[in-house]
Length: 109
Length: 122
Image: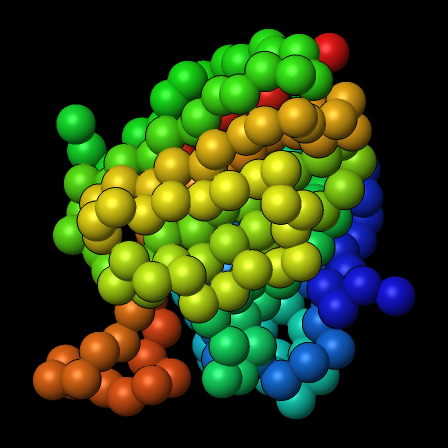
């Protein structure tokens, strides 16, 4: 079992829908990342959080340290949100990131 | 140039070739990373360099040889690769805590990724 599990692996929705992607992890962490990877490969960091909730535009990320769970929400989804969303954690005392397998999101017009 | 750049963006090589991937960060960071992303697998860490010193080698075969001549540049030298080494190779950088800065050893700054090099080994 991976240290970081994401669900769902694939998600297709219609434009305007509210999207939720989940991430569960099994180790103590110092930080959790949500990353976005578009076709072509480049990765953009969306959020880094260690507690509570962060919001940036239509994106919201939450984390529950006790439950070892984080969610990424997208409000009013748009086709340009189509990408792979990756959860990654940094274990306490470690420097490297451990990645989930990614969630492929497709938003249809 | 800004952020993290990687060259080449695409590379096709035979199993007997020797090639190098280059990464450059323009962010003043002190740590750099090589990651590998194979088809249908999560990203996995290959190497970590802090202050030009290799601090982590994630059991990477010796046909991959990293080099960090200074804190802004990172290379990955490739020789006698196998077709299963075909993947997207991503470089990243971050600013890690060092003595004299505010915070402490657990202060964490996010990693910034380059666009990647898509490698195909024939």
